[in-house]
Every structure is written in structure tokens, then in C-alpha cells.
Image: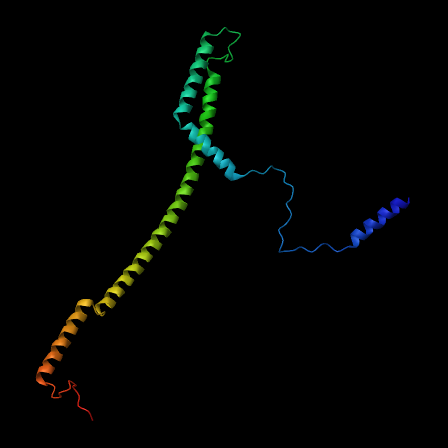
Length: 189
């Protein structure tokens, strides 16, 4: 009885407690689901592998061998060992089932490839835009450097200017010879 009273008191306390506050900064706890969860990417990868296998020569060889063995077995095997009682209806059903699964799997693989191609094309387009912008920037920089180099004194220009100055100094010396005996150009003051 005492244990029942203790349990009743605990239930009453839990009813009187306020509901816990929902925190928005934390993710919710996962709820139990009725249906099992699956990874769509894993299913997509599996379907691509199957679709790739269905498109290989190996698959065609194995399928041809299976059909040939099936037909030969059901023609030449004793009646008790034949597993297709009706003339090749089960074979037709198996091939139809394979085709009905192959078509959607191939379409799913193609859709995934189209999505990948679309993403790659978008990345290529962005890369091309960046390359064009970089090329235009470099073109502007080269044009600015060329314009700047047009104003820079080159070695030949400096030589020609120095030769002109030397000629001018020689002409001045010839015009105004030094009168001082000591070799000074400017007399003392």
C-alpha cells in the first residue's frame, strides 16, 4: 500500500510539472517511423550500377546463355525435370519482368547523370566567367603598363640626351674658352 501511495504521489507531481520548454537552438529528437528509412543516394548508386551492368556485353552474354540453357532444358529434359510446364511462358514472364525493371532503372541512371552534367556545366560556366574576368583584368593591366612604358626613359633615349648634352658642352667650351691660366672656368671673386 505504501508503494502504491508513493507511486500516486509521483504521478501527481509529474502532472503538476509544467511542460518542458522547446528549445529552438537544438534539433528535435528523431521520432520513430512506421516505414523504414532508406538513403536515396544509395538507391541511386545501386540503380546506376545495375543500369551500367545491363548495358554491358557481359550481361548480354549471360542472358543469352541463360535463355539457351532454359530452352534446351525444357525441350530435351525428361518431363519430370522440366520446370516450365507450359511452353516457355515462365521464360517470357521472366524476360518481361527483367525489361520492366530495366527501363525505370536506366531512366533513373540517366536522370542522375543529367543532374551531374547540369552541375558540371554550371561549374564550367562559372569558371569560364572567372577566366574571362581575369583575362579582361590582365588586358587592362597590360594596356596600362604599355601606356606607362611610353613615358619611361629608355636606355637609348638617355644615351641620345647625354650625347646631346656633351655636344652642347663642347660647343659652349669652344665659344667661351677659359681665360684663366690655372685651368679654372670660373674666376675667383
